Image 1 (cartoon, rainbow, N blue to C red):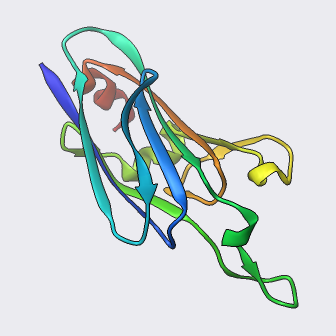
Image 2 (tube, helix red, strand yellow; image 1 turned 135 degrees about the horizontal axis):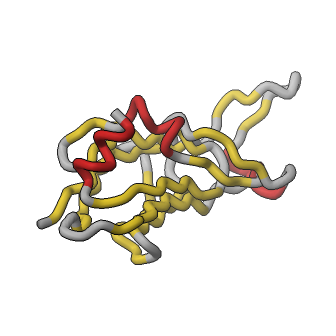
Image 3 (tube, helix red, strand yellow; image 1 turned 180 degrees about the horizontal axis):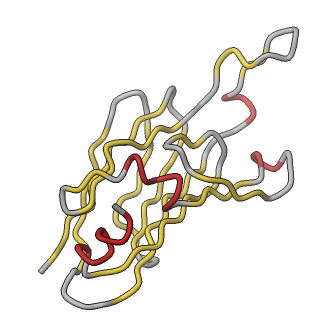
Length: 142
């Protein structure tokens, strides 16, 4: 039996590339632009095992961030990931507790790990560990 992972991705401007992996196997890879894309793939739900979903963003450069004379950001490339479901159960509200976002401010700062609130503003990776059967895992987090 399989569970379905689904999410909607979009970006404020073209240029970002996402690689979405399950246990190291790429499930979706492509450029993200202003148009939303719904991504879905199956997860084997028949055995008790640990899994890891990763969402890696690359392709953002300094040219994607425009700054005014006072140093304020006036436009930026941001990737939004929303409407995240696993077996039709919404996970968006749980993402800060479930996921960690690892990045280094696009090479302009130290490596950092923070909670994930649905937006990626730097090249980096979001990591979400979970296990199957999904219904047992969901009982623990909901």
